[in-house]
Every structure is written in structure tokens, then in C-alpha cells.
Image (cartoon, rainbow, N blue to C red):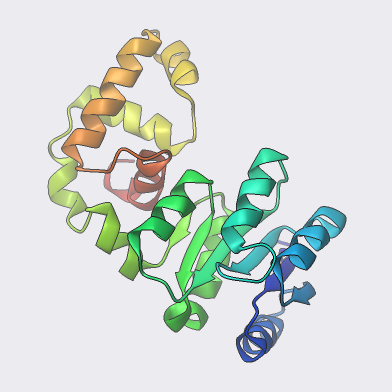
Length: 210
């Protein structure tokens, strides 16, 4: 399998250099490194890397700003954010803008390879420390037992990134019924009412129900 082409942006030169050298040692092709968000975004548009590893806070454009623009313009580059911040608002922004990976800088070198591997498979990857803190899914085994067989069936399709309409067509039920199941699953798993929260949970915990 070909290694993904990676772009890195961080306004801390030592962290930028360290991450670049670490990934090069692992034989990942680095197509560019940048210290500000605008340069990074322009390079994403021009070079179309498979993955962009971005610091959340940078001059000109933040990592979240870049993720918003990529989503708006349907740019296929997958975004991984790295940050020192553990505030809930950043976690929520990551979910809202379909960010594929979210790493705390203190664990970045330990988790980055697993993160890249997961993202390349189409599976979101969030630092376990930050995910457990805000997703309320520290005991998924006990939570999954609350779901009915019909809800498990819906959950399997959600993990496959199927839309409510696609699930309804496949299972020969109404979209309204699918949405009702979604709402019940979110409630039983005690997930927050945020876009993609259920998708992220289902993909991180699909070994429990597949």
C-alpha cells in the first residue's frame, strides 16, 4: 500500500521539525511544512495532499479555519489536528467540521502513526484522553447492551457511513423510523447532540457490535 502524502503546519518550529523528521523516519512522504495557516491552505489547494496535519492555533488561518474551508470547497484532503488545548469547544469543532484526527501534542508522537493508519482506512481517530473526557463513552460494553436488535442493525449501517435515506432504502423502512432509531441510540449511549458524534462512536467501537 502506498504511503499517504502528508503536509504539516505548525507555528512552533521545533515541533514542526520534530514531527517532520519522525514521519520521514517512518517513510512517509512529506510534501511540505508550513508555519502559518494561509500558506498551508494554499499548499493544500495546489498539491492536494492525502493528509494535512495542522496545529489548531496558527497565524492567518487556524487549523479549524482550514478544515472549514476544505469542507466548504469539498477538498478531499483529510485533516488531522494537533493541539495543546483540552477544552471541550475544540473537540466539538473537530466533530462539527468532519476532522478525521484530533491529537494532543503531548501524545502526538506516540499516537500519530496509529492515527494516520486509522484515517487512511476512513476511520476517525481521536486521542483517547480527549475522546473519553468528552464523549461519555468510557464504558461502551455496558452501553451497547441497552440497544435493541433493530438499533444494532441501524448502528452497523451508520458505522459504514450510510445516510438515513440509504439505511431506510436498504432495510425497507421509512427515513423517519431510521431517525427515531438514531435518536434512541444517541440517548442510550449518552452521546452529545453533535453532528457526526454517533458516526465517530460507531467507528471507534464497532468491534462491539459487528
